[in-house]
Length: 215
Image (cartoon, rainbow, N blue to C red; front, side, top):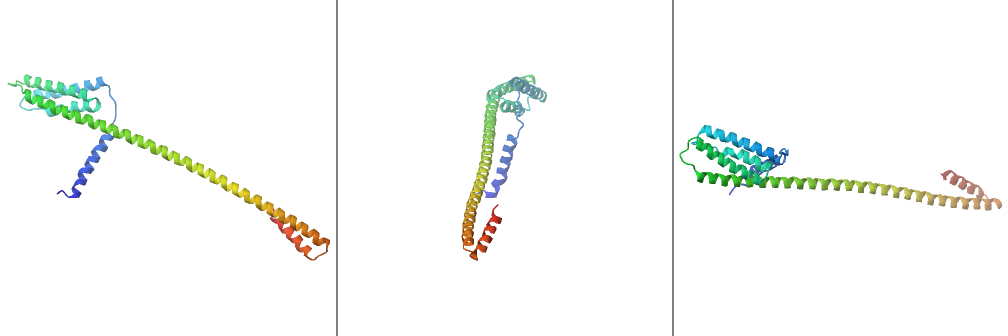
């Protein structure tokens, strides 16, 4: 049984590979330019294959143009480059003087190229889908943050209006209360003054205190 700790490095490496693929420069090339570049690489590998002789197979190096076609083009383009690569490999072997062509090996090489191109094309699709979902999620989060900020501003404005309204209500009620108290004190003062009562002095003092407290 494999210890749990042994799976962490492999998983971190896989995450690193996926991150590198997602950060791969997404420059666009035309189909014609891509095909020309792939054919150029096929020709170079074929020439090197011819120079090294048929004893040494360079079928692995044909994966470079096939990979370019699968990643930046389409699966159909990659399969076309794979067929051309097989043909160039056979021609280089014939030019190098091979006594008999290995069609079985060529067929197996084409199957391997096709599987590799299919996997790479699928990986490119998955990476593109992942990027699209990340962008959609990022936009959704940005809209959510903007909506929350708008709601916070509205809540702050409503709270400020309510605070001002309550302050105005308290001010009006207090003013009405003080006005009523002043009128009552004035009436009391007049009554006490008319009766020459000693409490008239206290009534006048109460009226002065109210006048000083009136804003």
